[in-house]
Length: 170
Image (cartoon, rainbow, N blue to C red; front, side, top):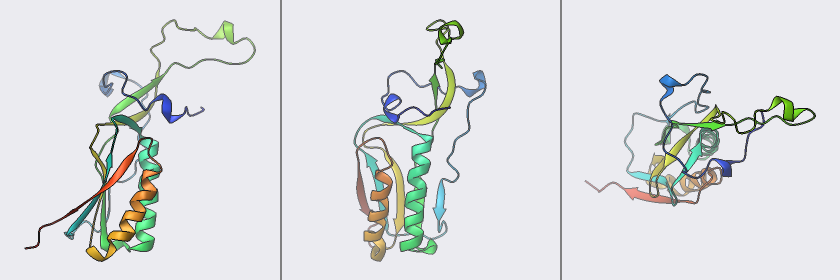
């Protein structure tokens, strides 16, 4: 199966299609982990990827961004010095009306008759200003964490920015 470009699924065109109990054959999410790094320690600095436009982010894009961010953080900061969390979940089921191509396709394909489509993947619906990824770390690793989050932004189908929040000094 050929994957369609992300621009076909990026916009929120219709209402959410999430009721899996009525569907058969929904492919599983490719996201392996939602929390990575040191989960026990509290860090004073939170860096987050915040999206600038309302859109849908496919589960493959979330996983690609997670892998890029996590690998860079482990290499630069070390596993014990950060906590990475994915803040969205791909609930929305994407559908596609498969079209036959090649010789004799007109006899095989149904065209637009019964064009509801089959489930081909999932996506997270995100609103403008919503956090997608967050990294908690120490102040000495902030610059390296920003570089790794920047790497993750390149994998997302929407413009995004990095927001830094520091815990108040006690």
